[in-house]
Structure formats: structure tokens, C-alpha cells
Image (cartoon, rainbow, N blue to C red; front, side, top):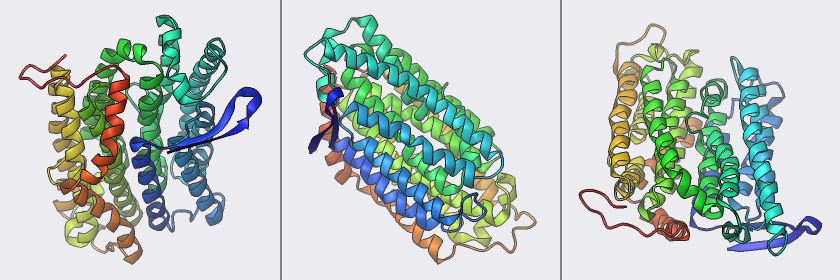
Length: 446
């Protein structure tokens, strides 16, 4: 599905929108999570700098920008949405967050602007090259045919401009350092949109632009990107194991998860590509549940330190079970949604890069540590003084978390509806790169 209308004809800029299976799934993810955030964060605007009305305006503007990013088929339009997202996020963190919210908002903005400037330079380069090869254009399909007209050096330089911008957004090690501060300072609802949806723009951009427009450069940098992905998987896991703050722990787990997603994207098999896209969707909901429950726990307790949550299983069972299910999905427990996507990524990666897949598997072992240890301490340990009178989820919170938990459970047993949408688009991405799926062997395939 595609529609395109002339927008700024003097610069060949069109209002081009369209979706394939990958974009459709991510748009679905966005439109499902936005109402959940609004309902779950009904009181989050209290104490904010600009009041309730502005808070929800910012949420809805951000939602519009995210849908625009996933649907844009014109590169200039994509860039407009990509940069415009920064405005509502900056004000949501800086105006409605807590603690060092101003510093976290500025750090997020500076990192994102730096990446955006690099991408803008690459976009201008593509525009000039297109003008020398038949006419200026920002159409993604037309730009994907330009790689034969670019030298390897030019393609590599332009590729890096896009990749670094997307790696910052994802975030991929070593471009991740803005994330823990932003997640710690933002409200729970803002964190859900930040880690659940906004970060997916980075990995989506890698698929849509890095792979399709720069196939030769992608092949050149794939070994390096796989190494960065493996470092992200292990580094994020080790940081999560040592985390004392529940919000920082969830942020660190996301660094590890995005390592898996990026690994699947650059494994260059249709199975891993499908797994990476499904992982984006599943990670959004497991992270949403974790952040929402963590936010409710912190609000009730007045602290986000893990040691302060002892005994919640006995005192607030619904809240504790919600956190437990989301945590088990985060570590890819069979029967929950993340298992399917992580399995596809690892199996698909093994057929082409067996050593990388084996190393990535250690991330699953570490995930058991960074999830089970805080679950044991926070939910099943001795009751921490001050927790005796904490209240369980109210009706509004139950209604907000219920669909998220339901999606986590249902997709764990029946991911087929989403995979039927994703698989054709994923296979096309791999085919455009000039790859075919290797036959699986005991030694992997090349």
C-alpha cells in the first residue's frame, strides 16, 4: 500500500506514505501502546510543569510523529518526522519527569541531534547523487537503485551517517549512554513510549535505509555491526545484573535486547530478519509492562530502589504477578512472546554466523540472572518495612495492564498472525541484499 502526493515540487519532495509487513506491525504496536500509556498514566501529569492538557497533547503529537516515521516512503518526509519526535520527548522528560530530568532531557536531545545531523548530511549526499543520475528524488524506492552509481567509499560514508543516527536511537553500544538517565528520569508512560516505540525507529531505519539503499556498504560493515550487537547483548546484561534501581535495570535490559534485534537484522537470513521484526513488537509490550508496573511500584513506595520492594507478592499480588510475567517474557521464557522472536533470531543467525549465535546465547543465561534476582528480592523476599500498607492495582491500572499481559501470553503460543504479515517483507529485504537463506548444517552456513 503506497500513496504519494507532490509536496514541495521544486525540490522533488513528496508527501509519500506506505506500509509493508514490517511497517504495518510497528504501526500496530504504536497505536496499541498509546491508549495504554494514556490510561495507565492518568495521574502522571500531576506536578508537571505545564499541566494535564499539555501532557496529553505531547503524547498524541509523539504518537503522530512515530506513525509518520514508520509510514514515510519519502526520505525527506521521514527525516522531518524523525527529528520532530525529539520535541515532544524533550518536553515530556524535562517537564514531567523526576530527579535530574532537565539534564536527562538535554542529554537525550544532544545525542539525537548529533545523529540527526549526520543523517542529514548523508541525505543531502544522496540528493546530489540522484540529481547526477536521472533527476533529484527523495523516493526510497528510487534511491535504493542508486548504489550502482556510487563508489564504495561514497557508499560507506553515507551509510555511516545513517547507521550512527539509527544506532543512537536504538540504542546500540557504544551509543547507548543517554538511555539509562532518560529512563530513570522520565515518567513510566514516557519510558514506555521511549523504549517501547521510539527506540524501534532506530532498528526500523536500519532495515528500511541502511540495507535497501546501501547494500554494498552493509556487507562491508556487517562484521563490525555483529560485534557491536554481541557487545550490546553482554554489556547490557552485565549492567542489568549490577543495577540497584528498577528503572535503570529495565533500561539496561533493553540495551541487551536491542543487541539481539540488530544481530537479527544484519544476519542476512529471512528467519533472523522476521525474528528481529517480531522482537521489536514483543519487546515493546514486555518493556511496557515492566515500566508500567515499576512506575506504580515506585509511586506507591516513594522509591525506585529494588531493595525497597521486598515482599510485594504477599501484599500486592496482582501487581507482583504482572511484573513477574513481563519479566519472564523479557528473559524469553518458552510460552511467552519474546521466546519466539529470540529463537528465530538465534536460529536464523546460526545458519550464517554460528559463532555469533553461540556467543549471543550467553545473553539468555545472563538474562535469567538480571530478571530472577530482582524478582526474588523484590517480590518473594522478606517484607521491607514500609511496604505493609501498600495498595494493589486499582481498576484503571488493571484495565491498562490487562491487554499488555494478554498480548505477551497469546503471542507466546500463537505468533502466526504477525509472522504471516512479517515474513514476506523480511524475505524481500534479504533478497534485495542479494542473499539467499543458507541450508542449515551442524557447522552453520556462509
